[in-house]
Image 1: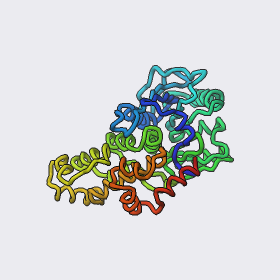
Image 2 (image 1 turned 60 degrees about the horizontal axis):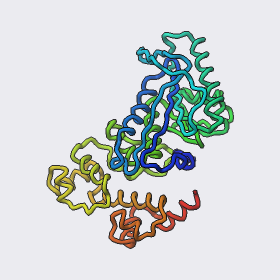
Image 3 (image 1 turned 90 degrees about the horizontal axis):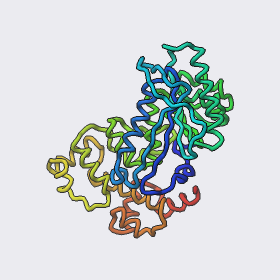
Image 4 (image 1 turned 90 degrees about the vertical axis):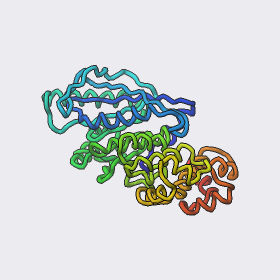
Length: 351
């Protein structure tokens, strides 16, 4: 079971120049503020990226906030007003995010909280399930999904302190501990608090592209961590777990145009340093040479072209910045035991 979002759902969004995706955050009383603000901020920043930075078409996430009550107190005591009622219907391509709540009940009785939770559960069952919307559960939001029957027979996770409770609510679910997030079909669940940011960054990577997710992570000064089920870290993210501004400027420039014929002098000019000093920065902070970083991104571009187009290998190599298909295969072997041709065949078998 991988931790990525279903290709079928992703493909259903189409390939227009600009894609708009409605996202409904379901808020309950005592909502955990970081469970809401973290994921929402990821989507807000992703929506501000232009197509060049995102490495393709721009993806806009249209955020709205709904719930069984119009005003809720949050975990930090700040009230949230203007929450829209749970709608009678939602667009087929809309994403529903069920936000977790604080374990401590303040400003509301337990009876009121249970009533609000029951309304959200009934709404999920009645509205989201029949048209097979994507449902994302942050932290304890998985408990609401479990009560709605969404996790039956699925792999899932939640805050480590609630895994036993989740298993009791959904006995047929396979509750996985020590996971940042888990996706099974159209349902995704995350562990506690900041793991919601990791899950939403993965959503951005799947729907808007890895470059977009990398740009958002950089803006938020967070590191895009892989899930335990993921086979490897994205090359767009590798070598970016540092805070050196000059090196990030160079890496950003390369990521925008990996196929460019980058010289040591051009990169050094962006970093406002000498070529020798920039090479030292790459080794110290990124753990690789400048050329190694360029090659990793070119292979990533080639892999995307192979997976998403019918271009022959010479055309793929040219667009990715390699001198020839032979050159591409030689560099490819440094990072992937599978050949480009085998990669295309494997992708065709999975589609």
